[in-house]
Length: 415
Image (tube, rainbow, N blue to C red):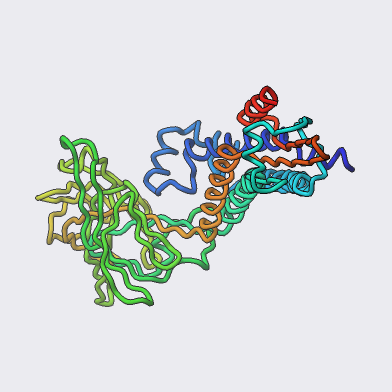
């Protein structure tokens, strides 16, 4: 059992598990992760890489952080660090209680060397920098908190992609969200969010240099306005609203139902940043099912100042409409009538909630504090015993404390 315990608490095992965790984190941070891709990005990934995308998914490389292997790796590393911290705590207590043999001994007679005399000028026994012993436990504790935070946050986090057009309101509709794998549908946010205006800034007409959105939010705290940027999310209770880099144009329609009711139909088209200022035709094919009536839409949208919408609608293999619409013109699809109103910009948003993110940051703070404490300070203890004219000095120091070893050699030479 003792051998098994030492193996379980072995630093070599910890380094191996940590190396595997780093590799997994690098893979999850660099490879395309299906849980973090926006709908347009997911379609592009699967379309542009038809062979590589299924291979990544089969090997579990497309959902690294949500995999069972990643959770098991985090738990194993956390258990190893706890065991190592317990072993080190036992050694620290033995060190503090004086049950560890001194690392240095010096015996002499008469007057103490000047350096030692300064140390023992006030007391016969001097202890200092013992707080540095807690650097390694604090380092281990930081690792444990970090690993525990990641392991707990992975199944508890919430993430969803959302596309909003200018003037459109999200009011908790589940069909507006594309949930990430593992996200709990019961945690869908119930606040109201409206995209008021989208600002897109390009450099030389090609490179996206600025993207921000003016939004209006309403929750239990009231109604307020804010500007959301790519690197500056907006916090709404436990949720954070991010802007991703997906933008485009929305074709806006007024839909007239047979019973005389009107509602809005929005069709989003993704645009590459380089084509944002150009009137480039945008294509999209999709089966739209409204009121139980599936209709195949083949659509081409030409945005900017003079928008136009080319539509071919098929129902049960028959063409029910084919033509080009400008703002104000209508298309009769039989089950309903569509009137093309024009275009507005849309932006991709990302909603997330990480309940244990604070534990992750606290672990990072402990990790940094323990590292600095271990690197900048060394635990030392000196004890002086006198027997008449004879004196004996015992010192406890770590093997890698080269500053103290050099000072000890100086004291021995001055003896």
